Amino acid sequence: MQYKKLGNSELIVSQIALGTWGLGGGSVWSDKDSTAAEAERLLDACREQGINYIDTAPVYGTGESEELLGAALRGRRHDFILQSKCSLNWRGEGGNFHYSRDGYTVNNDTRPEAIRRDVEDSLRRMKTDYLDSVIVHYVCKSFPVADTVGALEDLLRAGKIRAYGLSNSQPADLEEYQSAPDRAQGVAVVQEFFSVLSPFHGRSYFPVCEKYNTTFQTYGVLEEGFLTGPAFLERSFAKTDIRSRIPWVGAEYHAGLRRAFEAWKPLCEAHGCSYAQLVEAWALAQFPNMSLLVGMRKPANVADTVRSLELRLSPEELALIEDSVKAIQVEVLDK
Image 1 (cartoon, rainbow, N blue to C red):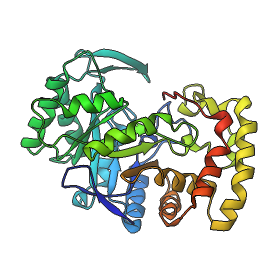
Image 2: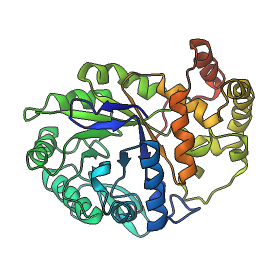
Image 3: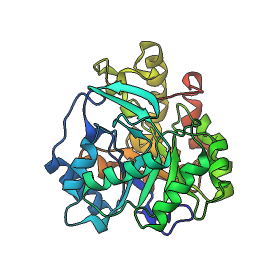
């Protein structure tokens, strides 16, 4: 495992992070409901492989992911860097409507009182005294950034959090947060979508991250499974499932994906790796200060993902991987 500082914070994190969106289950991930015992085994595998960085959010299963992690972390909280999020809540206390799902109405609220309440709710669900990192889940223009930053910096000073970041944002948002008058530590990490099928947003963000020494944490590198191999293209999902709502479920993209897998097959054979490991290694090679956030639900997935750190792809191989999907790349992809 490789470790780096998270931005300008004092946190030392594994380059691969465990994503727990799928752990929350519900209608978004309709194929499996996780148990506390399964979450414990997943953390066991992470510890064995050297992964110390865990990402969750209140809305993952409307509290379910955090509850399961709280149980799994009992007695070993200090072994892990725990990251959750703020701004999306279902308390009905204001903010902007974001979505309705599974009987809940979720609003996006970045006012100071909402940020503080979000953090307290996460601490309660996960039975911990502090979060190592908290991310503004969706940047919101309806409320002053200076007020949001002030609340986050207050939480830092109070010891409730040790770092903070942004998600579902734009490079200009990072500039604005870094210019806030109350900023001390500043934004340690931006968590944004990035994959070989939709790399454009990430690439526009990299220079600003470099400017501020902010870690870029990519999610979606495996495109919710569609880049794990041809067999995944045969699967079908409920209408509410996230995997039924992204472009790659459409038959018009399948031919392009199959051509890509054929082009990548010799690379996988040469490096003794899977398709998933190949595209993960491609992502890691795109930016030096990269954190790879991968949604892993089985211990075997953890070991497979860590193997991507060992791959060394040549410039020609990196180019071939992306050239193989240029015809089906998507400029904007909002999940």
